Length: 379
Image (cartoon, rainbow, N blue to C red; front, side, top):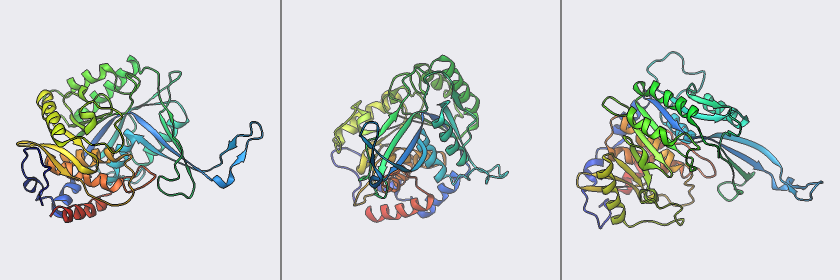
């Protein structure tokens, strides 16, 4: 089967991916467990409220419906979603089970939260996963919030059908120089002692999240020279500011097209031309996700599409890009080629999109099963 999309001059995909079998995948997965990772980014709290519609009652004061919450769950979101996926793929021991094994890998969270209940819940969730929180700063400035995606849903209704409208709590206060210096100091202190640095720029309001205008330049200077970690960046609005990083973006972010029509796609030739120009101008590798089609990677003769795993039925794309990031960056640090890393990222995303109504993760065993499916589809 020809795995190269028509219309663009590219090498065949069989050579760079033909060797990714179960044995090769297991070898890479075995190295994941010893990697040291720092995730610098905007940590949110995903909070799910399960509402029982049968218990709804009118408010005595206003007459409006008082929805009754019967269960509350929460987990780290945004940069925390990447951490969730990294921890699952690395088989990171939960808190209290690590022991004294120095060969085990680690994950450090670098960022800040507000001094509030949501920040407490977020830290509790991260700590329970075995994440190092020494560089996750608490900012007590008035008006500083821990960002929250509040997601009410009907109890007992699986998938997306039961979801209500989401409520977001965001920071609209400038990060400021004091916090910027703390974050820069955190990265400077750990950058020589980690194998991977992941930058997750989630906040769209300029200067209100971890990544301030000054921090981009500081990060670039810290990454100059050799012997530095695999540096990977993902940004909703400002990906081109990450000098020295491998850049991951979707097809629309590549062309600075924001808020695309759901289900829209771009022509292959358009993606290939823009990707070629970006790599030439920025002198850094680029991974461009294209939804259910797969991920574009630069080959010897131009951009190549690494196909996604195809599944029928309902999917939930929430967090798919974050699971791709976890799979791909761990693979690169473990010695995978960019093609292999793109495929392993695809495998991770193919697992999480089928976990409806939650921001799921992928386990090593699920990756093995997804590889079997991909191999069958791309004989």
